Image 1 (cartoon, one colour):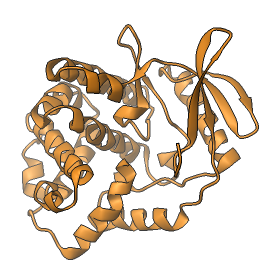
Image 2: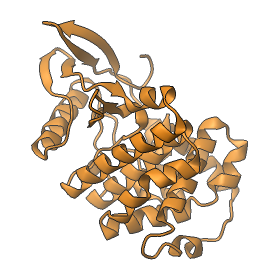
Image 3: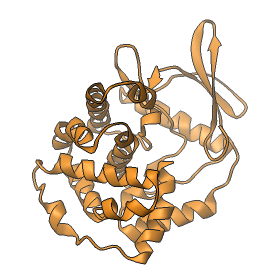
Length: 271
């Protein structure tokens, strides 16, 4: 892969599939400062971008995060080898995105519900993920859910509660493109209803602050419309939870020119 993402390649070692992840040296300081401004402008702390570490620093962040999550009992890749600027990681199965692309809407909703339950289980163990987009979740032959991609750490710029809120926002934005908003809402509703009240309230507040996205994103392209759909789906999922009507009362549905600029920058988080 080129660009801001680390390069990942599949290999087979001793008959075992593995992934070799190379950590690059690109710098995104100016872009991250703009994204941070956008999140602050919109009042959604959970969407502040964490620092993008370079090369060996990114490798060490990923190693530490994998170790911390594994210690909590979360299904993440095992580090099975390493070298200068790369880690060799165990294979956890197909990505959720690839499974959803080849499945039906009904089957997809069930798989998304299992993935949502796995996200909530991480939170219940006191953990957080960071980028639980569909491409960063893995599904094995037994439909067990695993998690990938940890070279950035949201806790460097936000609280645990906001990091867990962020997980829900990114999870929804990464899955809504594969199934209708109503199906996504149905897939996460029960799990969100059982989340810690502080996290659930944080998701609700974020949804309220982003409630204008449905109308606003019609002018900003497919990825932007996906984020609007994700917010709508989370709103539907929260509607039956305690305090569900609060989201409708928190903010008026107004959009200013500054919000448009902030949104255009913020979509970089979901690419």
